[in-house]
Image 1 (cartoon, helix red, strand yellow):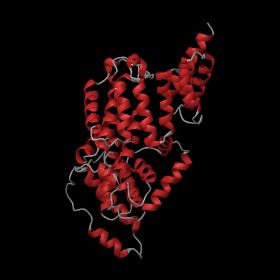
Image 2: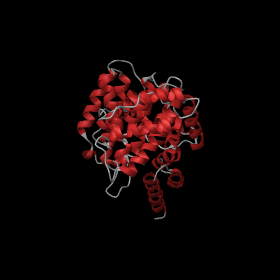
Image 3: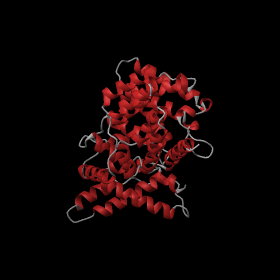
Image 4: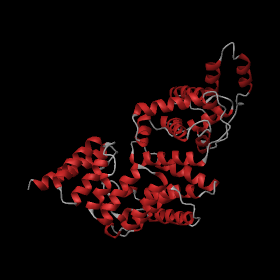
Length: 381
């Protein structure tokens, strides 16, 4: 088993430790110590039961870390609970761990940040980008969350809404970020949908499937980004689109609209259009209006400005954009697109270059740089 496979066992091992009385921070440290030991030992002497090995080693590291005169009695009680020798059942505890991390003692935003860091495997920088806050601010938030749950027994699972937010952010990072987490997010959301009859769980699963269906067409053979309007729709996964639309329709029929159902409705309208020119932008604007009402999110309003520009013309899109904060991520890229459609190539080229400097990843930066170069070339002819 390689290092990635070893680290994939982390959620199950961490769940065992917190169930047995370890506070979250100490359990996380003990599991990390056990993972380091596994990377060192397993290549020469792989265990027959990898998870059981990690549980035993992590538990012993936890006991060592908590050993002191004042904690002797507690330490002996915990030692009596050490897992018995032999294979550990091969169960997937990841989704349950998501619920445990969404602890009632934490605010929803802190619970999401902690889970993304401890279980989802995202870096502090990636989480900060998802929340549109500085990395230092997010680091403080995660540290406060760890202190809050330190010493708390994880026997009160959090609510579905917090877990959905975590799964959504994990999917988004996997879809457009540096680490591929898409398949894991879809798998866990499927498990949640099978266990809970909830329209927003169905909405999130539909949203994931509809976005993932387009993934093969999002990049060219050289790795460059392909905008939605230019994608080869013959490369879209029609079975995933059909499944996503079916799940969404069943959820919407329950008349309990939520954020993820509305987002999935936008994705469905894109997926259902035979060509980019046949996209029903008027309906998409209406769905963004619903999303803005549900979330009051500046990112939603930024996306709505793009849709307004397509439905009512670039001047209308620029008017909608003018009401938003220019420091929003991808604001410059949206402004560049709308100015180009309005015929102002100089402003568009300048804004594409500005957007490239602020791009969150290399692929997006290269795409925006090429857009600026394309317009500058047209202007210099």
